[in-house]
Length: 122
Image (cartoon, rainbow, N blue to C red):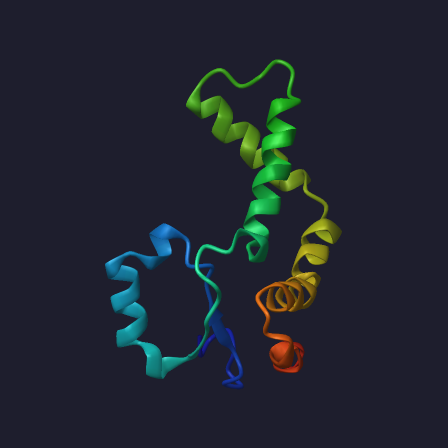
């Protein structure tokens, strides 16, 4: 974190997906909690995870391939090719959507008073 955010303003965030919530990951976060700030997300909140959007875009691209990949190596190659074809603006749009995603989630979960804090975070 100190390399990426030498100003000390960086925050670690994760989506609490099952692998990220395993005991080893949770233990590491607890042991290193003094090294960085940790932005807590709702557990397993797919609407907060832009990786889901990226996965869907890649899946759609793979499904539209002709001929389709036939082996795991072919699939890996196709995924890498399709990843490189994702427009940078698409990825930037996903990142920029985060304040709105957080605000919408807070509204749905009844935390309207916290929206100002969320927008200050971003």
